Amino acid sequence: MTKTLTALALILAASAAQAETLRFGYAQNATPTVEAMEEFARLVEEKTAGEVTVQFFPDGQLGGEREMVEMLQGGALDMTKVSGGLLESFAPVYGVFPLPYLFDDQDHFYRAMDDAAIMDPIYQSTADLGFQGLTYYNSGARNFYTVNKPVESVDDLAGLKIRVLQSPTAIRMTELLGATPVAMGQAEVYTSLQQGVLDGAENNEFALTIARHAEVAKHYTLDGHTRIPDILLIGTAAMDRLSEEHQTAVREAAVESTAFHKSVWDKAVDAAATEAQEQFGVTFHEVDVAPFREAVAPIYDELPEESAAVVEQIQGAGGA
Image 1 (cartoon, rainbow, N blue to C red):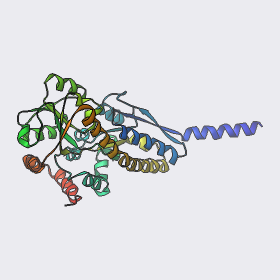
Image 2 (image 1 turned 120 degrees about the horizontal axis):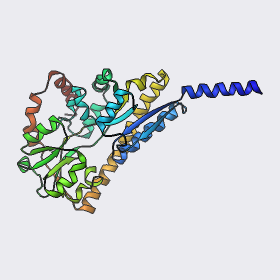
Image 3 (image 1 turned 90 degrees about the horizontal axis):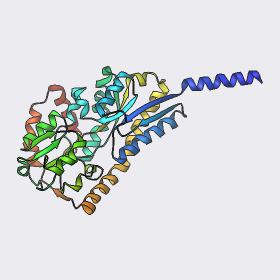
Image 4 (image 1 turned 60 degrees about the horizontal axis):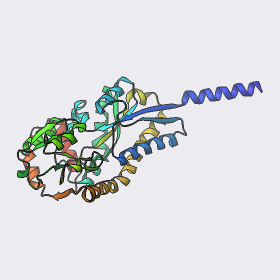
């Protein structure tokens, strides 16, 4: 009996030694993305027979997206999901994603993002900084929305104070379109729209519903100027402590969670648009995108060589 108990204790100790918990922090997100991250966790546990699990720290419990990337670098956190736009300050190649009108439509976006020849070098561009990309999630098309004056042409943007991401590319785009860019955090936008500090902002449809911006902004323009992916990141130290088998499982789970995300994303976006129109009285405006593209063309002339090469690859993945 004693030998049996000793053997059992050794087995349990060995199992405990093999078990890994990946600490995963993220900011507030739309439901489809939260579901995709939860699916990733489920798949990891399934593929490793419970030897690797994921512990979530949601809704900014650990700070903002930048803080969580820095925690990955220091080893205090194992995984996070952040906007690809944020990563421009860590690796310049990520600066291609905030470029205006880079993708023709969602199908083009998926073709480019699913192309390993394009994305693998981008995911690995931060490996020396202590983290790397695993996969992406669609964060939708960013569109302009305004409180009073609808934007139905480039001229309608003239002089409007528009909240943009804290990104040099977003600021430059807005200037070229004739508006006045105001870079500020998302938490300040609602009050700024309400008080007239801002005339409008730009984001996907979930900003209207989840952030309740539809309570004050009644015009939404479907210009689709950017499609900035969310990027699922893992710390280099976290990946290195996993066995090769478990590393493979994590990578597979990441890719499969993206497929899951695609399956639920469109329905959720349509539901948000319907809610904005029916419950908040938001008017959606279709526009001719060609003049918008023409206005921002100088941005592409200013690109560094490395970014221009990636843009060429992405544009080559289009249907045109």
